[in-house]
Length: 216
Length: 293
Image (tube, rainbow over all chains, first blue to last red; front, side):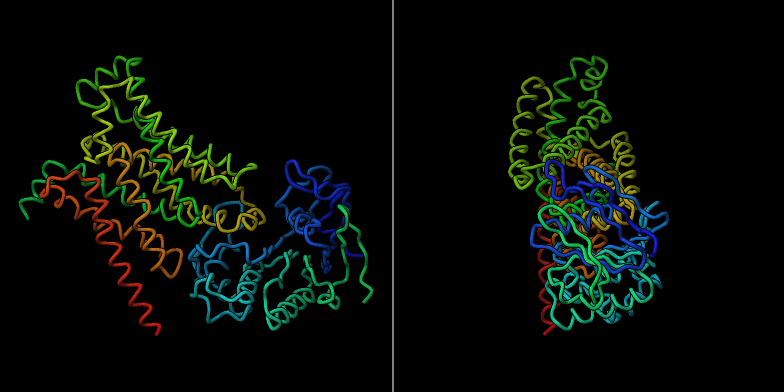
């Protein structure tokens, strides 16, 4: 069995004054494709944000493998189109790892151009991010998350609000990344769509999480 | 015309240079306020700066040496006023930031509006205790740039120079935490540090702007150029550059206009921004739409 990339130990997850999940014991293994499923408001995104380090656990521990590089893809709908970023500028944000300040937001960086091509957005680099379709935005955000190589990719409902074609493209891109050894953790409302790709499942029910291996 | 320009340069060159310096900083700050959807803060914060100045004037009797300087020169040392102006602005920003991050954050606009009313009331009452300061505040409200001498130019150059350096260095990070805070955290950044830096930049630049060119022109520079630039720019970099560039020409042209028409500089420059920038922007937008078919 591959080693643990991120571990949550007896963790309580939530926000100041609001516990969403209790007694969470969860191991995300390196190279694993883990799908988090559950009803609306069950705490799926809270779990993903805690795994990503965005929310600290309210109790318990989050242990991260030394040197683990995490990529994160938020829901595209939560990004405000009033920012006149180009697609290149959005992807270049992925180069801005701490420590130190973001090095550049220019699109001319070779890694940005390579990410644009991988995402099939080479002809959209100078377009405004806010003018893209939902599927194109999602591809751009995936390109941003992987503009530098990552060991583990966390995605919050990566196919929400996109058409069927864009959904299939997202599946095949994530399958390629997983085949190359990148771990994937994704939140979804449509478990049936990820049955082929996922090798582990995390059910979020009644404030608790339950792990199960894929039957596929 | 040449004679007018020569007269302006001979007698008001510090004011001209100050107006150019603040026109480099404030539209940049305003552009970021605009995309962070916090423009309403840009309306309230200068009012807090004005209240800070009024409080500083009311406190002068406790500092006899400073009061003497006020009597000699018509205004207290600008460093003293700046502490009050920038301090009040930064305090207001931190208070609004703390309130909006807690429960009731959806009431942020109402809280800022209430803060605006409170700041205005504090300014008026403080001036009751510092009647001699009323003239200075009125002059600032009119935007006459009268406190522009070599010393005030030095204060503005240092404060806005530091603000410009900070903006050059921190704008990408401030924009990243504003656009996608979660991604910024995953990349290892600490948003609170950048919020702290941002509040300091806004407090300092707005504070120094209010005490030199007055709140009216501060409002104008914060909002008019970025609003037009947002419509015209095709990238974030272009948006920030355009916001600053659009401000410079009206700011310079307003000097001969206010001199010839004998009007206070602040409102004249604000109108110049509106008269020159908005129609030009509308023209460019219409042309772009026509070109798109």
